[in-house]
Length: 137
Image 1 (cartoon, one colour):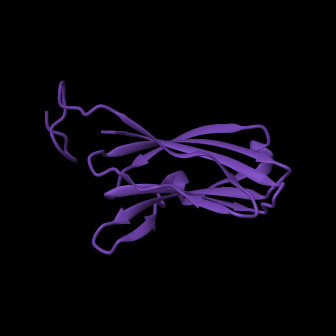
Image 2 (cartoon, rainbow, N blue to C red):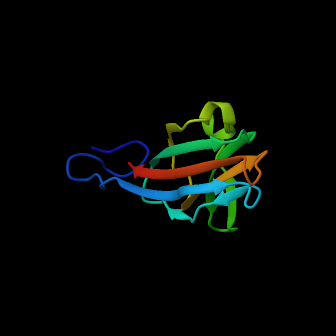
């Protein structure tokens, strides 16, 4: 069977799903206030699921997760502005204990990375962030 948007699909054609941890319990405080994952090659996959775990302590303000794709010719990272990814923020009150969420999107470049940017963080007002990506057709 031929998919309109890509290569043939059907029994025995699908690639196995791949899960990669991008950020593992990284603490955002007064230094650093943001963290960027390593680049993950995604060109062989059409979709991704982003798993987030967010926790706050002592009332920092907000944390924003930013998904970016690499444009290989220029080497520039571009923010993914599709759907919820255009403004993926959490306030500290929403994640005071711990918040686990999943979002899905399309793989639009050769590589993907995730940035987490905290505001209102100090040495005691912190966010602890984790992110993993599952790649699939």
